[in-house]
Structures are given as structure tokens and as C-alpha cells.
Length: 258
Image 1 (spheres, rainbow, N blue to C red):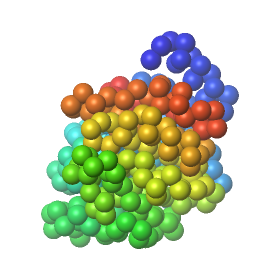
Image 2 (image 1 turned 180 degrees about the vertical axis):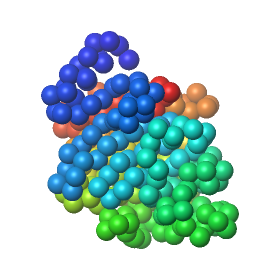
Image 3 (image 1 turned 90 degrees about the vertical axis):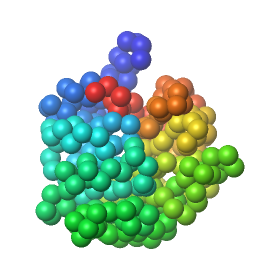
Image 4 (image 1 turned 90 degrees about the horizontal axis):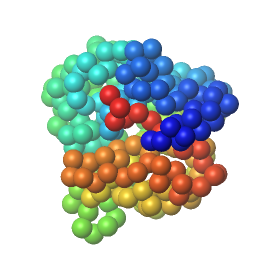
């Protein structure tokens, strides 16, 4: 990212009262991140790596798709809730999950992952399928379909198997896409305050499709994430930001800076 772009985003964020764009290691060490003030209380976003996110929220600390070395999470508070979108190795790893799942944690997964969980983890878990709802500490959690629509990509994420999630904080709804293309369900979302939208090829979608969907459902803020792939399918978050337009504030997180 250019120094000019960093300065512009940092200045804009500071004006909005949001801390952004510090290198991830510094942010984690300081237990800092991008903080959004909501009527329910502050929500702080910590990008970890690729598809893994830590959210400090009024309902508790939420880990999304935690994988990799457990040490990556040592600077964050322990998880109260862990959300798993689907079974691929960059979203679900049983060893990582076992290391991070404390005695009082609640795990919510899609049905396919639930069926893979070791017995000790399954005892802490519940499953919801596309279109189903549950709650955690009074926080509504809705499972949103996440799937490929392009014919040659359907083998990666078939319709009906994987979840995205909506977290319904009071006056501030958070959408986590998981791995998906710009499905009709995504495009028809309403009243989303904060979105995390994936983009990489060949497994999900390119930045143009992601930006087109975001411009349609118009969250207040959006993070492009999951935008580098092992097969060279990297998408440019700055190009995504240009295509989204001015109606949505694009946040650039440090998923790949650790």
C-alpha cells in the first residue's frame, strides 16, 4: 500500500474515531484494533490471518474461523464464542480449535463441521444450517448461505453446506461472508452495519464481483478479507475499494501483515 494511501486512510479513520492500519503485530501486542461505537457498546475488530478474526463485543469475545498456531491468539482475550463457517483447512482446524476452546466456550458451526468435531469439542458445540437462527448471551446469530454460483467453482462450496453469519447487535448488524460468491442472498441483505466480504480466485469471487455486491447491499463499513490464495489468486483490496464507491466506507485490515 502506498504511503499516500496509508496516510489518507489513517487520517480519515482518526477523524471518525477509529484506529486503523497499524501493523498487526503492534495492534495485537497493544490489544488494539478498529473500534466501532454502537448502541450496544464498542465492537473491536482484530484481523488475525486470512479468514481468521477476533471480535471483542458487548456479548463477549468472538473468534471467527480460528486456524493456524494457537500462539497467534495469545495476545487476545480468550474466546467466549467460536464461529466456524465451513470445513476447509483455512477455516477449520480441530487442533487449533481444541487449543483455543476453553471450558466455558460455545462453538457454533455449520452441520458439516459439527459432524467432524472430536467428541470433546462436539460437547461444546451446536450447529445451525442455512436460514437457521440461534443466540449467544442474548446475541442473535443467523446462518446465511455461502456458496459458489459459477459452474466450475461449485465443487469448492456447494449450495446448502456452508455458512456465513449475521450477528444482530442492538442497532449494529455484522455480516461475515465465509467463502462464497455474490449470491442473491448476499445482495439482498439489509441493515448491515459492518461486513467482512471474501474475495479470491478460483475459490470465491474476484474483487469486481465482491464490490458489486457490497455496492448493492450497502453496509456502513466493509472489510475485504480472504483475498490471498495459495494458488496465486490474490485480489487487490484497494481496487475493491475503488469499485465499491463512496457510499460504503472500506476498511483495510492487516490480515497478511503478521
